[in-house]
Amino acid sequence: MPKESGRKSIAQNRRARHDYEVLDTYEAGLVLQGTEVKSLREGRANLTDAFAQIDNGEAWLHNVHIPEYTQGTYNNHNPRRRRKLLLHSEEIERLVGKTRESGLTLVPLALYWLDGRAKVEIALARGKRAYDRRQDLAERDASREMQRALGRRAKGMD
Image 1 (cartoon, rainbow, N blue to C red):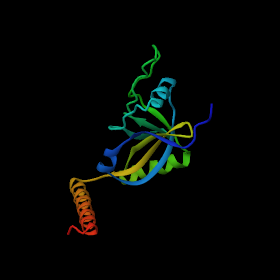
Image 2 (cartoon, rainbow, N blue to C red; image 1 turned 90 degrees about the vertical axis):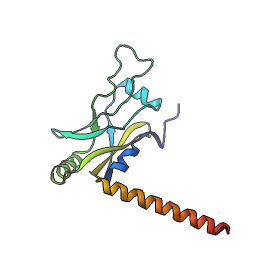
Image 3 (spheres, helix red, strand yellow; image 1 turned 45 degrees about the horizontal axis):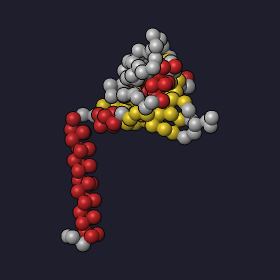
Image 4 (cartoon, rainbow, N blue to C red; image 1 turned 120 degrees about the vertical axis):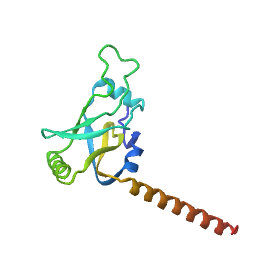
């Protein structure tokens, strides 16, 4: 059987980019149980309310919903259990400093397979205020309208 290669997406946290201003991203491995791996292979996961936290020098991922494996037996996993993140100690120390001093938070952006291993992309992020979100929406609408106008002009409709 050929070894997997490349990146294959499992789940995205689209809400995170809407609610947070992403400052820096990190790639981390996950410590998973067997039935969690099988459930992820089926492409089933939800990052909606997920967050990462550092306790006693270890990074943990909370509230990621990986549903139970359908063919699992009595030793199936708990869908919302906390999962350990695999990061280098220097990265963990850097994250501890930034989250403590500046009030930043760790938010997972994506869950994916990379060369057959489950990885999560976590972001060091700052929460957006309501007016920041409105401003982003207004900018997006303005750029969309400009693109439409340019398209109409290119077609000779304007």
